[in-house]
Image (tube, rainbow, N blue to C red; front, side, top):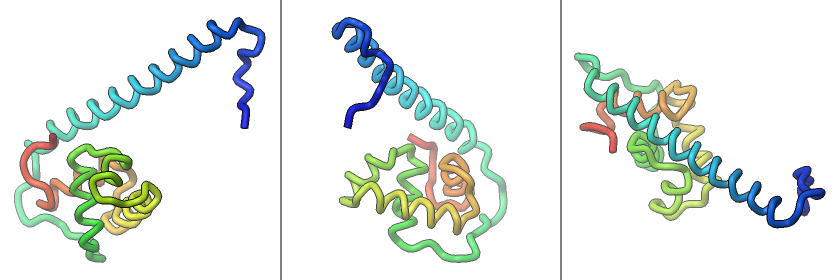
Length: 125
């Protein structure tokens, strides 16, 4: 399937350069976002609340615990899938399920809850 990118009137080498720059921009944005999340978690990990951690009303499965730890360590869905020998769609399903159980709205909240509840110790890598 061909996507209309609006570059049909440009010389092929210019269109190729635009596509290359767009791919690089997306890659850099992902890298920056991952680094920002890790810096946020680094700062958060040193400020954990005292007292017993709150646990979700519904227990996580062993696989959800494994995936939550990987999310808290900053792994992408693709990395989790490769490391766990799972399909990417399966990882997404597990993440959606564990987020619902722990009441997290996004991956950062899920990672924070993993540290808050003692599921992951130390500083995020």
